[in-house]
Each structure stands twice: as C-alpha cells, then as structure tokens.
Length: 300
Image (cartoon, rainbow, N blue to C red; front, side):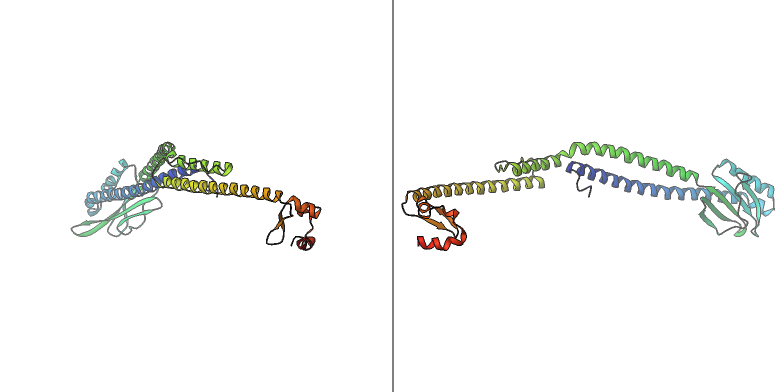
C-alpha cells in the first residue's frame, strides 16, 4: 500500500533501481557461483595432480619398505600452505608414512577411502591408488584446506557488492536525469485536470510533448475537454434562451387582467400573475396543498 501512495517520480526511480539491482544481483550471483565451482574444480585437479606426483615418487619407498624416504617425500608438501595432512598407505591399507602441517593438528584416516576427491567438514580429501606394473602397492591421501576458495569468494563478494553500489549510484543519477521525460507530462496533465476540476474552466488544454502512450493520453484528455466545453457552451445558450422565454412569458402574464395560475403534472402551482393574487387574496405559493382543489374550481 505504501508503494501505491508514492509519487510517480519516486515510483519511476524505484522501478529503475529495482530493475538494475535485480539484474546485477542475478548476474553477480551467476558469476559468483560459476567462479566458485570452477575454482573448486581447479583446486581439486591441483591436489589430485599433487597426489599423483607423490605417489610416483613413493613407489620405491613402498617397494623397499623405506619409511624414511616416504616421510621425506611427504615433507616436501610443507611448502604448500594449503596442505593440512598427507599419508602413504601400504598394500594392506596401513599407514606407512604421515605428514601433518601441525604436529597437534588434523591427521589422516586410519584406513584409505574410496579413490577420488570429496569435501568433508571444510576440507578437500583426495585418495589415490599407487600402482607399479599394474599392481597396487599402496595409496596416497592428501587433505587440503579451502581457505583459498573462501578468500576468493569473499573477494568476489566484495567486488559484487561494490559493483552493485556503484551501479546503483549511476542508475540513480541517470534516472534523475531521464525520469522527467515520463513524469513531467503526466504531472502536467494532472495539474490541468486539477485546475479544471476546481475552476470549471474547460477551455484549458494539456501540453502534448511526445508521441508515445502518454502523448496519446494527453490528446484524448484534450479532446474530452473540447467536447465538454462545447456541451457546456450549448447548455449555457439553452439556459439563456429559456430565461429569455421565461421573462417574456412573465411579462405577458403580468399584463393580463385575468388571473392565471400554472401547475405542473402533479398539480403544484409553479407560476401565477398579479391578477390571480388579487382574486385569491394571496399568492399561489401561500395556498395550502389541501386547498388546491377548491381553487382549481375557481379558475376552471
């Protein structure tokens, strides 16, 4: 209800702002979702490639049961801050070597899971089989955090908000410049209609400034005013003629020596002359309604 009571100027600005905001939010949300999915897939591919590399470099350690070499291979992951933990499993699924970004931090699962990448509790888990001559000799597990993804989402979210605010400001300025093209003719039409209603001056005309639907409305409004003006003029002429006829009739009645009283279809006295007043001793308007039949007989 509050929106309906707003001025047309504010409604136009509001419509423009809501349209721009809806378009930007939809496009920003689409771009945001696309980037999030794409970057998550990219992160998954990177961690998977890293797991493959670790697996290839660990075949010798698994084959010769060299835990020191396996641990050294896993420690190379410390240069990647996103890696939370990593493990090598032997052929029987037991932990062979383990790496953790923090000694007291998160560790590896006790047993290897299904091969592939999953996201669990805000972490990216990648399990990959290690094979040598088409025979599985172990598995590798890498756990990565998603902080880079979350930072990217926050950055893109701020960019979307900034673009939305900037675009809203530009749209507000543009709407302030362009909305008079629509609101000014309508407000002018409303002012003419108000003046006609208050002053009963049907000679006024609204100014037509465009050839669109608003211009057509103004043309129709002016045409209506013209028709009303013509009918009002004809009515005034008819009233003037009637008044002239009434005046002539009254002069005739006043000059008659006989009493004349005129009644309407309901028997009510509507006109009389001075002679009738002399005969009645009173004006016809002073005759009580119940006495009219008696007076009818006098004049019949």
